[in-house]
Image: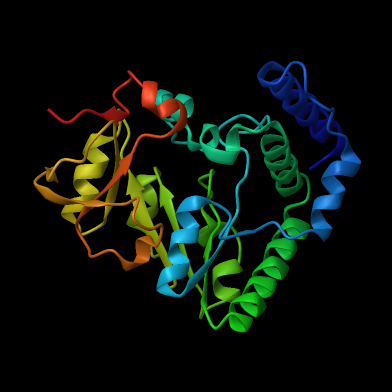
Amino acid sequence: MEINRQTEILIQANNNLKILFPDRHKTIVFNDVNMVYNRNVLGISADFKTRKGTKYGYLTGIMYLAPYKLSGLNMCPMASKGCAVACLFSAGRGKMYFVTRARVVKTLAYHFNETRFIDTIKESIRQLIVKAKNKNMTPVVRLNGTSDILWERRTDILQSFPNIQFYDYTKIAQRFRFSIPSNYHLTFSLSESNQSDAVYAVSRGINVAAVFREKLPKKLFNRRVVNGDDTDLRFLDRHGVIIGLKAKGKAKKDKSGFVKDVQ
C-alpha cells in the first residue's frame, strides 16, 4: 500500500479512537505499526471463553483485530447495523482503551504490509505449537476474533499448518459456496438482516450462531439450540445445530433485532 494511502488510514484510525476515548488517546504513529511485525499477534487462551477450552485439552491462539471500520478500513464487510453497534469488542477486555488501541495497530500492520503480517501470524502459530506441546495440549487457532477475513482464499496460512485446526465465525454466506480447507471450521453468524442465508446454511448442515438476550430457546429454525458459551471450540459441535450465545457488552441493549428475544 502506498505511503499516502497509509497516512490517510492512519489519520482516520486516530480520529476514530479520539472519538471513543477523547481524554485518553495516544496518537498512533508508523513506528507503532512497524513494531507489530516483531511481536506475537495471537492471544493464547486470552479471554474467558477461549480459556474454557483448556479443560478439554485445547490451547487456543486467537487474533483480535479492530472490527468493522474502527481502523479506517472495513474488516467486517457483511456486518449489519445491529452487529456493528453490538460488536463483542465492547465486551470484556475490549472495553479498555489500551486493548482497543493495540487491536487498531495490529489491523493497520495487516493492511500496510500484508506479506510481513502473514509471516508474523505464522511465527505466532509456531510459538503456539511449542507452548501447547510443552503443556501436553492440542493447539487450535481462531484468526477472526473480531474480524471477518477470508483466510481460506487470501493467504496460505491454513495450508502451511495442515495439522492445526482453525475455526471462526462468519457473516459472509458466500464462503460456504466454495471449497473450504478441511482444517478450517466455519460457523455462520445470524444477524437481524441475513435470516435467509442462515436458514440456507443450517439446511446444509452448517451450524448457525445466534445471540439471545436473556435465555436460550430450545429451538430456532426448527433446529436444536445448544449453549455456545460453554466453550469456544466450535469445531467440536455436532452438525446442523444453532449455537446459542448470550448477549454481552453493548449487545445487551440492542434493539435492532440482532439480539433475539425468547417469547
